[in-house]
Length: 264
Image 1 (tube, helix red, strand yellow):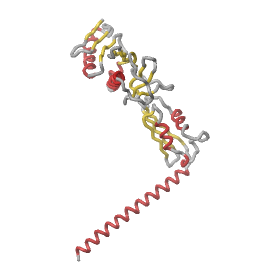
Image 2 (cartoon, rainbow, N blue to C red):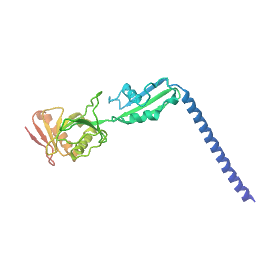
Image 3 (cartoon, rainbow, N blue to C red):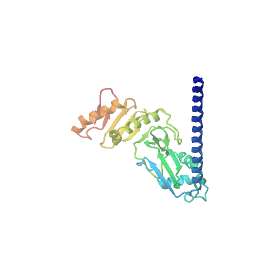
Image 4 (tube, rainbow, N blue to C red):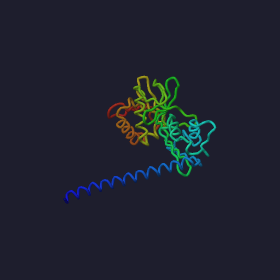
């Protein structure tokens, strides 16, 4: 008999727990629905725009707002619109379609504000194709168009480059991947990032690096084993050029294992 009572108590506890959970869930749904209805009736009082990284300037507040206006009826403005009329999802998707925007988030607040967060794409290399076509390559290997509003200060690559430009396309050719590999390594090391100004691709597809200081150029070869080659260069700078001067040699060749070959 006791066992039977214990069993019923366990069942009753489970039923009570289930009823409580259903009640709480219903309450949350009602609150959310009420909040949504309240928000729909609120008018938009302000639009806050946050753009990252702050050291890139492809977009400013005005440019972001102009992009979002393209997703709205011509006679409508965000300010003073009822929140229920503003399709924040459409605004967000419009921003995400911009080639120089990596990600975007648009959401409404109960106080009548619209928050817009924009993550810009970060170029690591500017490419000049053999025919003069120019584009950026970002940290993910995507090709980006140049901007009329802002020029990003990154190393410039030119010479024997036939990689075609399609907006949002990834690098695909041997030379394109070599340039991406080199630019990625340089971008991750502040000293080399401050040092390298240009990457020239020779007819044999070997890379020539042009520093911002001094009159010499660096024969790098292919982009394989950049750690070893740059380590040799750093040692040579510290132990060699610091004593004889930066303009003593015309070229510095890093292609050969364990050697740095210089020519005047």
